[in-house]
Length: 103
Image 1 (tube, rainbow, N blue to C red):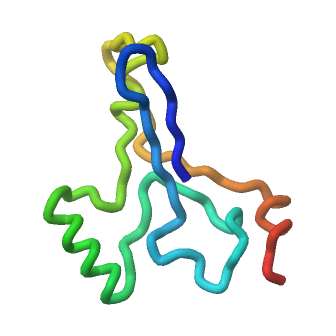
Image 2 (cartoon, rainbow, N blue to C red):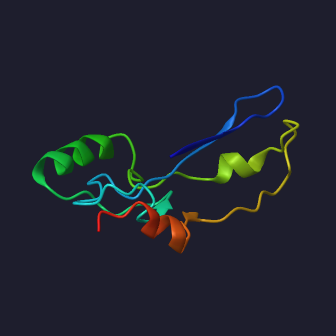
């Protein structure tokens, strides 16, 4: 899932969240799990190889930071000392979790 927040006179603030790179095995319900901006490590040889390649550019391959999003207001002005969470969890309601279930 991707979110984009527009700000005046500067780049937008962006956030990407997901369940995990390995997907939802045996589950087709998009709302079956929480989406987070920090995910667990990849499993399997192919995805571990991709993870290794990404790790050559950053130590934070499993996380999307939120500091840039908090640094400026929607008017594009610096807020001074930003306050932001380390991780965001997008939790589906019980209705959504069960509504599109395979069962």
